[in-house]
Image (cartoon, rainbow, N blue to C red; front, side):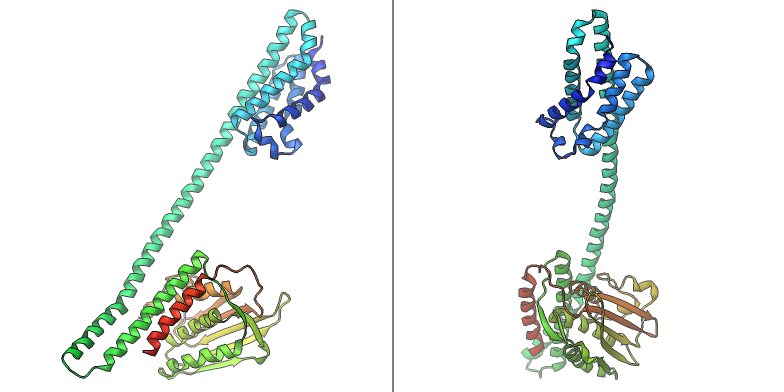
Length: 417
């Protein structure tokens, strides 16, 4: 009896039966999400190798079966099988092979039957062993990869924590300065009141000025925090872009005049109505324009706006141009990072290192981009590009709008005092 030839003839039946039993086995759940070919894997080639061994035992055919077992183990690891599921697959295959050959084995002589059974068991046992070895190697490789990824992530997390700690220490130091001034001047004011001396209005001005500065720092810190946590909402409406630009320039022109500067506005009237968040839009403009005034001692400051046609939708391009201190090229890549201060920012008492970071964040929220072009001792140009009409998307929760109203009330209290 040629059991090799018989096994080759039964190959299709064995495969079909094995597929049904493996698919229906509740202990081999990994097959449920795989295709027929993915589950079948290297089974046909392994059956061919066993059939050849039964017909003419040869070491090369054993090697073929083992090689297929290695491939099988690697693939099963990639497919998410457990070691137990792989063993059950082989156990089902062994039972099906003997079921199909049972009648012929019983009819054959004892010596040939034992030889055939031992050969089939030997090949399958070696295949299981090598399959599990390769499976284990692949799993260990995945574990090592995950470990390396975890170490990299942990290092990045440590860096972020250290950076946040430095930022908080810096912020605490910055908040301490205006708060100390408020306490000190308030104490002097109260002493004058108790001694019936005429109140010094300069003390009151200092208290209010430092109070506003403290409030501005807190607001900027809150804005950065809300953006990071994804809680910042937008309130979309149609606005007169040129009108808002004119208003911001008028408010800051008083500050510019203290330095014998003037803010020139050039806004093309064809921009028309713009759909965006007016509060955030105004906030960005105020930030960029106030920075231009702060870091410009002589020369000029201008704000220019124009409509730029685009295939995906018209866009509004706004540039704030100054002849101030400028920014070194080495610093330009970092000026939009929270708490980063270049040489110019470190020379300013009112800089927290958050202004440009918040402006950049707001521009992203408004679906726009921001660019900088600058040269030390020549000046800077900050350009923002926004869609004429914001593309409506699912908006975050409106928690920030409530907080913004609260902050506005506090700001009005300081301003009206």
